Image (tube, rainbow, N blue to C red; front, side, top):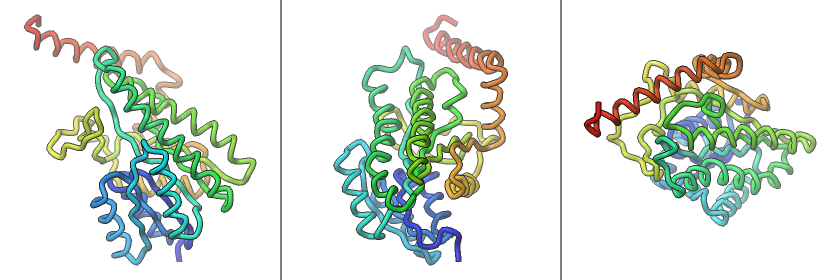
Length: 276
């Protein structure tokens, strides 16, 4: 028997990375799990993995940039499971580049997927969560508090998730619901292999520091625990907590690190232009 026996869970961005492993962890603890995303084959792989461990899964394809698709996916989950106890807005990606390099469309796409789609997922899930006194999860990032060059659009989107989660927590708690905003540090996932348009490139080198990476299974375990405990915010990985503390109590150190990164990148650009 698991502590989440019988609960119904819906995870967007559930075909890979944190979404996939959260689904498996929820399943191991007894929940029925629906996963949504654009790549139906990946969703079915997650369902097969859930079922191979004796769990109950459902693949519900959904493009979270489409309100009708979100509502249709939610209806399928509720029809299939009879209720909704947990909804996790996990879908997202990262736009990289200096602010000077990013056009309006890049900013629109980043905020549309990471912020607006999370807000709409919450908006449509709340009426069902109200019926069960359920839990809402938003996947943010340590980048919501620690700002470095070449990541302005992504960091802005995760700072917005931080604000959205705090707002939803206050709005939902009086009615017996909860909102948990989860802030991972570096975790093994495909995010480093996704380009600025949201397309995945399996051969692309992930330039994040490998020595700081948490395994996805470990991250999923603590995320599910935070949701179960109805934590309002949960920041994890040791380096993530350390960096967040530095940003709060010694922001000048974080700024100095950002300056070094920016100068290194600018030197590389100068050399490419033949000026170095």
